[in-house]
Structures are given as C-alpha cells and as structure tokens.
Image 1 (cartoon, rainbow, N blue to C red):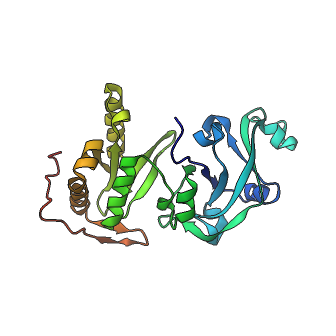
Image 2: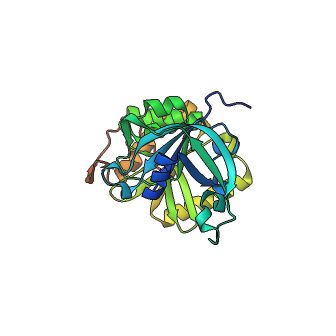
Image 3: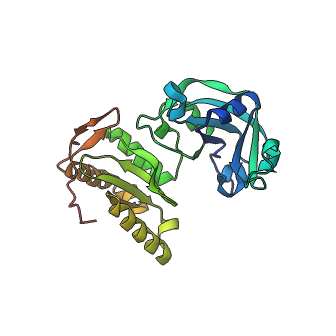
Length: 270
C-alpha cells in the first residue's frame, strides 16, 4: 500500500572528509546494499542530506547540505574505486546514489546531544520544517502523538536513539536522560508487539537494556489513544524518581518535572 506521506528524504552519515569531497565534486554517495534503508532499496527516495560527525569541526553534529537525487544504481566497490581493485572488499556491492550540486540549508539542523546516527528516512515536509534532529523523524501515528505530548510538556527526549555496542544495537523510540538512570519509552503498536515471539523479543531486549543501565517504559496503542495523560504522568513520575531530566545544552543540570495531582499513577500499576 502506498504511504500517505512517503519518506522521500534520506539523511546519511558523513564521517569522512574524503567522502565529503567526493559528494561535493563528483556528486555521489555509496551505501552497502546489505544495509541500505528501505527508501533506497525501493527507489522512493528523492533527496539526500548529510549529517556530519566530529571530524568536521564547527559543522559537526548537524545537517547542513542536501541535494536532489537523479539516479541510483548497484555497482561493485572496484567500479567506484578503480585504483583499489585488490582491496578485499573490491567485489562488494553498493548503491551508488548520484545527485545534483549540493546546496546549503538556510539554517542547519542541529543535534543538541551530539548524537550518532547512521540513516534517517523522513518526509520532505519534516525535513523542511526541522530545527533540530528530533524534529526530522516521521514515525508511527502513536509515536507522533506521544512526541507531541512530550513537547507540550517540555519533556526533552531523543527520538530513535541508537544504543548498544559491538554488533548489538537498538533504536529506542524515546530516550530520556536522567541523573540516576536513563529511560527508554517504547510505543508498542498492536501490529508488531502482540504475538508471542514479539513479546519474547521485547522481554529479551528489555533485559539487555536494563543491564546497560536503562529503565524501560512501554505503552500500548490503547494507552496512548485512550489514556495519554496517564502515560505522560507515569513518564514524568519516572523521570523524577531517577533524579530529574538532564538539560541537553548543559549536561550538569537536571530538573524535576511538575506533576498533575489528578494524575498520579503508581509506577508499577500499569
């Protein structure tokens, strides 16, 4: 079924000055076929933007450059880099994304928490309106509803935050950073979290995250659609229990969140 809001923008990691020179001068970017995002695989992506890492100095941890894509092909690494034909990865396949001249955004999209990303697929509208990295994401309806509620309550969170080490990585729906223990808030859509195997996977994931110092809150579709105020109240109570919410601009500062006396759910009553 065709998406109502197609994710026609891909924000890709740029962590290498040599690759950025290629993007500026030769106007192409490569992604290994085995790890390419869906909108690259199905050809629905129309625009490419770059998220710069710390090697770019004062442009680090921000999105500043974008372009319109005009062709995507599958090529081998040795075709991209003919001088490296003896490279062990010479036969590896990549999507070669070719685009028009890079253009600067009117204002950079910044990451206040200096976070790492690999790829973000989003809509043109979100990309054009974003002021900071968390504004870019366009996820499920219940996640969007919860995100709007967090913003209304001035609860700072990182969306689709990547945690893990080695080959085990997880993307958290919402990561909240507190003085004593960080919180992962998951919005469990009925379609993906109702089967026995899904429940077992979620439990294993929770255990791994908790072993790394995260507390996990999970809210169902019904929680968010029918009892959003209670879900937000429980989130705020949990934040306060763990020492308050960290200020992304000043990591040494934490603040308690105001609680609504009419909504005081017990922490383990859900």
